[in-house]
Length: 310
Image (cartoon, rainbow, N blue to C red; front, side, top):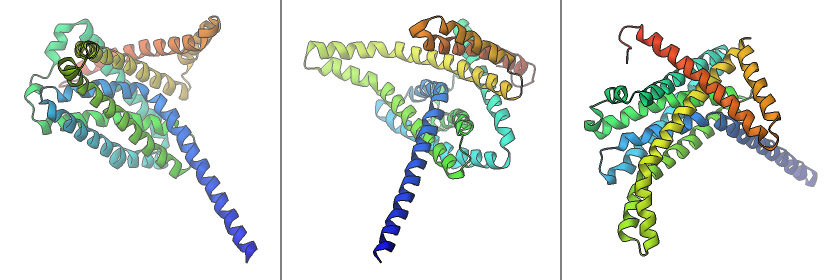
């Protein structure tokens, strides 16, 4: 009787160890995938605040909450099952789809660079109806945009998960989807409400220091949003270019990828303590330049297709 009880305890301990190892594996895979998707996450956070422009302050957080809920449904109800089905039935399609998504990111990044260099074109490209769109329409538009970015995040996550186990893949995709959604829309909420907080402090702060801080926060927000958008633009080009370079390498066309990486390692090795950062920076810069070229190619190709010219 006692031996049976201790055997049961031993079985429970074994199951617990297995479960702990599985959760540890999920955590490692989720962190790795989240790092690779960081560029898209930054861009998502940079894009979303514009969807609450023009609404009363009390409607800003409810609108963000609606978009976040739509984003979560995109990831968990549609993209997660689709990604799992793809990995099971057509794993060969993951790399081409990733590269297609990377090309889209390069194109979006190129468009932003073009608008930055040609402000008049950017003004022409702005959707003049955006300011008059209803709340429901803006939320729907934001969720559609999020779907594209979320699809790339989930695809990168799927490609990053090294374990063949179905449930580990499923849980990792779900964890990344939830973490990314909370991170992006938590940051967006902070960004959107920061000016309101600053205004309140500037008007009602108990000390001159507090009022000065609030005023500085209000004045800093436009610059912060511009900086975030600029970082998002660079991240799109870096991530998109990197995805395509990695895809080419998988198809045996990795000469450019290896040349860039070898040059980055050589330069980094000569810089001592900052060598690791320098290697990453050179790799990322080269991937970004390559992404810009790919974005230009896609833009030219789109202009040749009737009905797609910007």
